[in-house]
Image 1 (cartoon, rainbow, N blue to C red):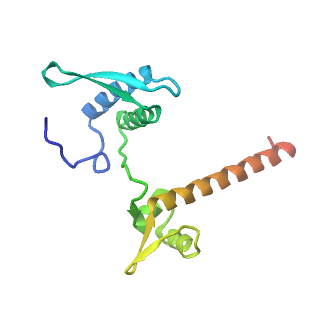
Image 2: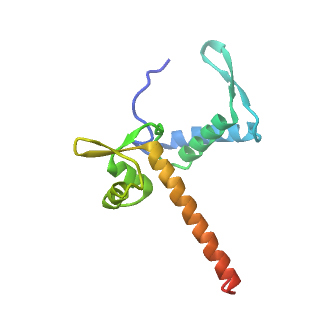
Image 3: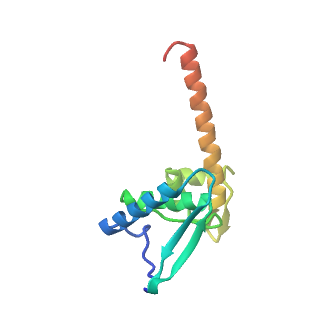
Length: 154
């Protein structure tokens, strides 16, 4: 088996070869997938061996999403939900400034811990805040659209 290396798509953009291979995987997965049904595949291994693999619908969708990102030339990173983020990482994920994020932390909008002088945010707490924020935004936009419609602006 070839040696694995630490480089990943958080560190670099996909090459043309990466994009082509990801697109091939994307097409195969898309053809095999149907809603809420496991995906079964046979993989040809070295020395003529065949391995059968069954992916749950969620796992197949995850591989499809990743292959879409790579085939379109986008980099990405994978983060466990129990990861602890710096304020800059969390701000980047929310697409806000670090000082604004610190205000959210200090006003108890997002849970955090302190390690010495440094604030750390659990990814799961950040994702919960983001979901709440995005849901509230969607609700307000729907309400505004409804009011515009009622007032004849649309």
